[in-house]
Amino acid sequence: MSREQAGPRPKARRERIDRGVKARSDDVSVLASPRDLAWLLLPRILPLAALFAFPLLGRLTGSYWQAVMINTLVIALLALSWELLASVGLISLGQSFFFGIGGYLAGVLDTQLKVGPLVGIALATPLGAALATVLLLPLLRLRGIYFGLITFALPLLLMRLVETTGALGGTEGMSGLTALPNRTVELYLLIAALLATVAGFRRLSASDRGLVLHALRDNDRAVLAAGFSLPWLRTQAVFWAALPASFAGAFVTHRYQFVGMPAFAIEYSTLPLTSAVVGGTGSFFGAVVGAFLLVPLSELLRGFGSLRVVAYSLVLLGFTLGLPEGIFRFAARKYAQRERVVPLGEGPKCPPPS
Amino acid sequence: MSASFLKVHGLSKAFGRVRAVDGVSFEVDRGEALGIIGPNGSGKSTLINLLTGFVKPDAGTVELAGRDITGIAAHRAVALGIARSFQLARPFYRLPVYKNVVVALASPRSHRQLGSSLGDRDEAAMHLLEEVGFERDSAIPTKNAGELPHGYLKRLELARCLALAPELLVLDELFSGMSLSEIASVLPLLERIRAAGTTLLMVEHRLRELFRVVDRALVLHFGRKIAEGPPRQVIADPAVGEAYLGAQVNA
Image 1 (cartoon, one colour):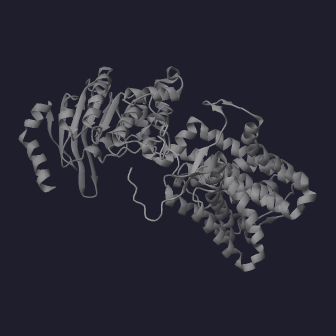
Image 2: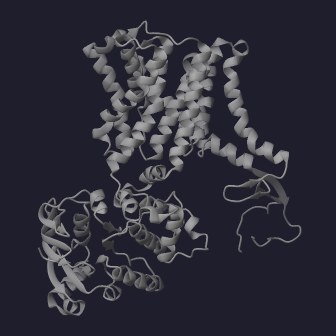
């Protein structure tokens, strides 16, 4: 092997070794020690435990951080929705479209039918997802940037529609809606929704139907050549993705007892997108991790006053340039590997790769 | 009703002012193999796209087993047993090779045709890959499809088609990009596919190899059929020689 490297010869090189349990077959892991067990389970159990404990620690966290947590969970749901769309090759620049529709639907259900917040959310979630999917149907032949542009325009369009026609409360919105019982219920409702979404989306991805959906992103013509109707596949993907987003909208409506034009605000499109990208696309955990980092960060940066956007953008820039694979993948890789520095020039130079 | 399995009559398609396919008619019997040849840009791929539902014709009719399928949607064509490969083999490059085949095995067509006999889809996919010449015990089937060399990609295309249990198999330049030994390994498979009663339609530039498979050839030039018949006869046709030579001079 010829090496033409300028400069002095390095004295050591870094070696990365996959650490892992002692023996592993396709599905079965044989655990050698409690240490292995802890290594394997802790990263799964600890975040769950923290999530479940958080609502109970109201005294410790204070209501401000509880509110931040609620925001975080809402954005995480929207980011999961974004990630599912992205995994089938649909890049959404308008998550607030799904959010707003769920939100307004919950408002209408509350004022017209008076079903109460929990039933209202349970109804508004699938109905909102279905409505959003139907509205997107004519646009499902678009993909890539074209789909992105349309989804960017739709919430703006709906917002102007509400503003000019005065429908659904117009610029005033609908206020005085039924409230959710209390903060603890609110938090647990969101946590349950988050876990259900992650579990559901992961299950979908692991199924053959999910495989076909992911194949869509790589080459939709070949999926068509395998005998699948592309519009029908995309319709399914959009509906599943719309569910958590629509839920988030309905939830926020009842939490603030208000729904209005802010439901279509651009923050509900940009924050989920940046969360999914910073957390790492290609993984549902990445979307959640991204939201849990960016939303609290954005709160902390409030101290910068009007420079907050600048500081926030710099952080974003740093992450996208420094960690293009996303935080989740980077962390998972570091966790699964041991690094050691091997001095060069001693012993056999290059052991044959096994 | 005649016995022809595939009947194409007066099929035409124009893109703007270019008449890509211009009044092409031909018939293929069940189990027959027909080669479609012609210089670059003669309309071969468009003809395939018209037959498989990827492009809608401007005029003409296509009948499959006595049923009018003109302008049918591509996924419905698959449901009727038409499988096609692509000239430019683009796999699902983020999926493992065998999962590329599982996508096809998960389709409604496979489900209906193979159904419960399929067993585990992953295993069935491995089996199909083995059939088209992937070494089972190598690491290749579990690699990401994006890492496959070109010759393998073409065979992956073939496996994907076979997963659909086709009655009419349409292959768009299967041999291009394959080495001679790769082609040699595929030829017996194509023989077996024919022996099983599958009708074969092959667009090909590599005539010598093509003529080992097909009984008849059809020559396109500027979207028109200029010759049809047994390979030897077609090649001897002066119009065909002129079309190829003319195209080469112009190129």
